[in-house]
Image (cartoon, rainbow over all chains, first blue to last red; front, side, top):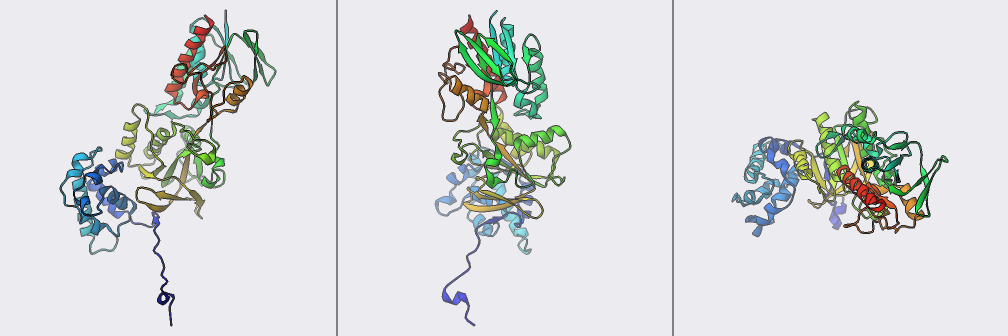
Length: 118
Length: 337
């Protein structure tokens, strides 16, 4: 039987953040290990100084928000872009331990690699 | 002895009146309600130090007990200039004459029902910042209409402020820091509750406000989401479902909260606007009273013998209202001397 997809139609993926159904296990675990994350005011100083951002679309400001909202799909790919140079930590006006934060996100993602909850 | 009438018994009117008394003037303070204190008596605690509002009000009232003639339950409806003096008439027939008049007629809260899409007066669990203060004062805990402790609370900044659709282009100044203060107070009572503030931009203009904002994030894990609420709806469990854009992620966001608090802004009170028109004072775009010079002469109305004190000339916090009230007393003194 022919389906509608064969005619070139597709169902668009919803862009909406569904906060009520997204899992917040990751942000909980990350905050436990790196509570300074709570001080972030999304100013973007980290993303502006980022060495990796010169060559990729990596943004720590955005990464933090994705983790906060439980939008975890792209995180593994995103965190891999960071070179851990630590420049972001030097410029953060709110004292967020950014380098440790990224390591923690990576670590937690790795830990959960076998599980499906993220 | 020269006689000054202060219209309005909120903190500004009380402060101006008590200073004028100490300067040796005969002062009558006219208040439309049966008790003094205006908006401040509806507050549980004041920002930024979460100090009991009752304590501040008591200190102001203590001074006012000495020598001010208090006229309660009296709403002045007319102020008329009669050969260098003023004749004031109230709706209950009460009348008085004065050598100078101080308008301390303050503000009113923006009626949140006008932002119909936010559901105040329609959904069970949408309240205003003033309602939340009432809840704090009642001391029976923070609860939904169904008498449950909320697991999630949302605060919406700029309700009725900076909004052409609400007819108000200006910033009401105090709502940002009020939301931060109230969010902390809710979190102190309900540590497991998740709290979200939805803002356009945060205006922590006063001393120690920024520090309180940081404390809200650092110590109380309150989350600030940049995005203005577009619409709210109610689900079966009487929760309020919010639709905002998470503007820093460039994505629409849907989230249900058990209690939604609307930060109602300040609007010029009806009485303030009526006196402006009766006395022929300049109408400012924001409807508040316009001083002769906003920097150099913030208390001068432009009408001889009529002065401004407090929020009738624009949104102010308590400290700024009191400072303005003291300055008003000096302006009156300079005029009457």
